[in-house]
Length: 627
Image 1 (spheres, rainbow, N blue to C red):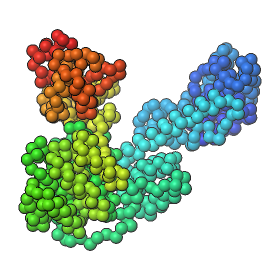
Image 2: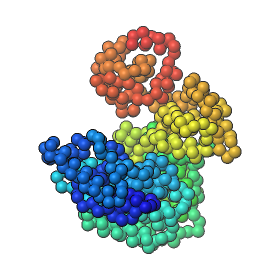
Image 3: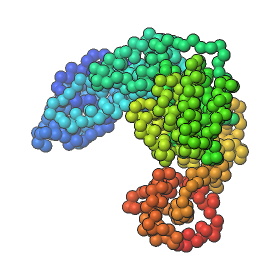
Image 4: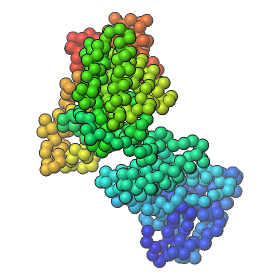
């Protein structure tokens, strides 16, 4: 902010100061200062009663008003010396300051944060010179102290959010030094925030600044021990452990690798934090400490995509990893250990021929030998390389496969093996539930959940797909919100809807990007129905449900509104003694939710549409007549 003759500038970030043409304003009355700071930061007029209560809440009303008049007098006298009498407006019941737009750093900061552009956030971050009103305190004014504390927290959080966003933008452009600068500011402000420390150390390692990475880690380790009496998390230790571990001499004949890819994949959004965690764990594994990861999420949430991305990153950016991938299917009840056999077939031919030829579904003794044979095979493979072993869709696996997965997970601690499994819901499978309970206690098993994508992730996807609108900002925002709502945050459904928009020529090629025809989209969305592939996806969630569960879902779908428990209990064909168990089953699967007052409804419009899609018109009418 430039300073001109008789220009009043108020700086409230850091130690507060008020200057006129570069000279400090001689105002030494503490509550007069507080009054001026409040009026400048709030940017609005306040009543005399409000200001009196803010600064003199402990005094009688009459005394508080008198003290306010005294403080206003001190402010006027200080401003009068510089011919700024019209700056303080207070002849009526309302008091305010008449300031130029750039007079107060806090109001400028707030305007820049609201702008949200990269240029604006950079300017905002430069205005922050420390906490709001740093070192300033007023005695006998608890309401002012509360306001000051709230304002300080709000402004600091806005500053940190701006730094995080600037760091993300620069990292996406691979402007590493700028990204490091922003991460350093974040760590300086919150030195015990481990996730921020991890990211900064990772950036140092990425740019080859090994000395800085080590110094940052040991400084953080010392602060954590001094302040909290604890050590850094295993993920943080793993960042450095790999540097200090002597590298193995590996054979020139590296095992063959095969990575499963999916054609025409959508850009991966909303999963960066999870991928970073997986890579951190993989670094720990490569140093010799095995680990198991379970990734749970609904069908379409991107479970398979995550392990494919992890495999690609390890294969591309990290030497000496053997990638073994297996996948379960709804027909795996017919073949025990099938996904593991599929995975081991990708190793060096001949090394595991005895294992693959073993008879698996026989007596207990042979099964035990087979389990130990698999473990020994992994030990053999890890002599020259780290191993990533992934088993996808464990919800389809049979009991022996679950047992083998748990057997390996509890015996990999001293092997450089990363065992990754994906599943709809780990708690729904007793073997995996036991594994997570036991393994997480010892730090050997990590459970991650894939949540639905947020609006900001959908917005990022639109940007990365190059989708542009030729209309106003509202239309772009409305399109984002519509996509998020209709997809339920499912990456798969998002991809299907976007493919549908392309097939309907609502998304048209436009150079290297795509142009959204807003007019056609607005007309088309009025009659929009989800693709059959989406109905198929949701239908998988309805498999293995009891007859009564299907009946309850059909009733809720036809009603299309929350229904009381008593109505469901008295519905023809619903078995009252089993209804509680049925509802618990549906709630566990995320198909039904309670809305209070014993009202129940379907969890999402996707479930509603899929159920109606499968119901005949006659069945709908039959249910509707009773509801």
